[in-house]
Amino acid sequence: MTTAAQLQRSSSASEVPPHADVVVIGAGFGGMSALYRFRQLGLSLFGFEQGTDVGGTWYWNRYPGARCDVESVDYCYSFSRELLGEWQWSERFSTQPEILDYAGYVADRFDLRRDIKFETKVVSSRYDEAANLWTVTTDKGESITCQYLVTTVGCLSVPKDPEFEGLENFKGEWVQTGAWPKQGVDWAGKNVIVVGTGSSAIQTIPEVAKTAGHLSVFQRTANYTVPAYNGPLPDHRREEVFADYPAYLEMLKHTRGGQTFELGTDLSAADFSHEEQRERLEQAWQLGRWNLQSCFRDITINENTNRMVADFFAAKVRETVKDPATAEKLIPSGYPLGTKRLCLDSDYFETFNRDNVDLIDINEEPIVRITESGLQTDKQEYPADLIIFAIGFDAMTGPLVNLGIEGRGGQSLKQAWQDGPECYLGIAAPGFPNLFMVNGPSSVSVLSNMILTLEHHIDWIADCIEAMRGKGRDTIEARDDATHEWAAHTEMVANRTLFPKANSWYMGANVEGKPRMFLAYIGGFDNYVAKFDAVAANDFEGFDLTTSKVEERA
Image (cartoon, rainbow, N blue to C red; front, top):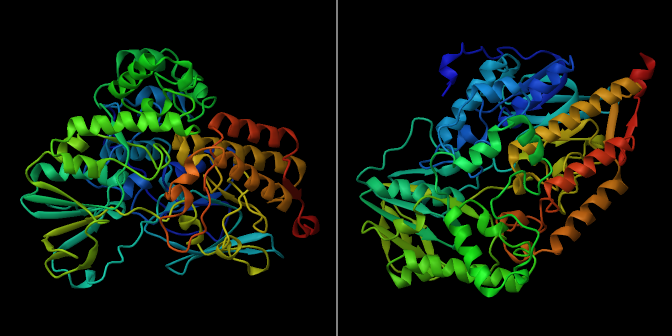
């Protein structure tokens, strides 16, 4: 495998220029893609990143067991044929260190760091209507103006703070999975507590359990998780992908989730006999990945089909977990399968068969406070040398409203979205001219292959800017009517499914006071791309493209 260390590391930007055509916030996979693509247009550009290097979510999420849940051959850039030929993934589902190494390789390969200021947080972004410019200000007091502001800050990049009474008195060490210390954490032989059983925890728990003295897992909501069966890429997938890799990645844009699955089908469960249903479910379990959720077309829209699949899942948990009481705690209830993020795991349920692992259901035994030496429930105190909080994110909107964005008339994005975000196509909002939000709320984003979706956004934005320049236009703004219509359409599509039945971060339900609404577009990546194509073909329908008075005077 080619590594970043094999390339000459490019130097990062040291000074912030006074002006750039485009400012990009974030240097994850979206930010790097944006810098590469906009540079092709001959635009001057500059980027800011809070971390010390590129990588985005893979920079911050260094927790043990962190691994991509999309196959690596799908979760990669498609913009360069040379890059596709140079990089070889070592596993079917790559680990965080390997993905971060890939990000570094790409940054070096295309000299992207020269336009990025690292260890710099954007604290405000204000639009000046008279000048038709954005002014971006950092935590270091630096400012830059730009014509176009592009946010690539990710959907899951603001970890929820652990708001537990007494945490400040804890004498051990505590960490968050979403902001894992770069220097690492030692848990060998120690008493460890993990709070949370979402995707990050499901990856963390098996790894910690291997060497911890004792591990206590505190669960509020049991989650559906299926085996990843990680390892080398299977032969049938290798043949499918590498026969024509660029064509394969292009084909993914015409799928519902930016991925293909062995058991993907347009048939409902009722189209199969009872015996065929059982055979198909068993095959899906043995194949792993998202096959369990894709083996019948109507799993997320038909309650009877969903219940059948959930019952199959519950039987698998009972087969795996030896203690019946623990098994029952680990079986989700109260929401349909797949309506919270379906997780991929490696030996998650098997981990609860270990003698050094306990599971505590906080619905039965609520957490009271953190003490100096551990965690106190209403029944007892659990000693801890290390507490790992895996309690989720302020998803979709949190990363954007934290940027201090102010549009026309000084209205902040936070104010505009106080009753819930309305974002045209998940990329733009009325009152915020020349602001493009990559994978914003009401985009397909978290319901698809993220690298594919962000590349699609970046390409569309670049084509849009190029078309505007050709028309002599310098301002683009989403229209109110189009934005309202897209919000209504997004809600309608979501309400046709079972997703709103879950109190998930998809619905904003994990953050107190956040408006409850489905935050992503669930109509499929293929339909989403078709909508963007239609908008561009109809002279950017739903947007107002104008020439500013500043430009006219010039």
